[in-house]
Image (cartoon, rainbow, N blue to C red; front, side, top):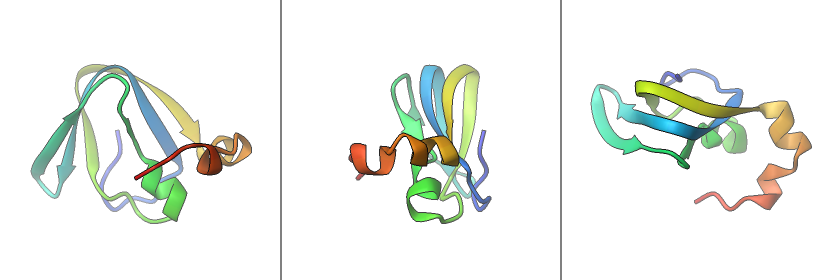
Length: 80
């Protein structure tokens, strides 16, 4: 879905399914329905910090950088 080191323009929320988070070739965690990824690229304008791979079928909602800003999500959401 996304590749570590790439410049990111989207934020994703998993609607259904699972995805693996990899740093280098090492699996860190499995994301599931309701989890999100891609926020660092939008919040900090930095390259992707991990690779995210779908585990089987995955449905996700995608929010582009423009939509993220337009909706004011930087101010409305609390990201760790």
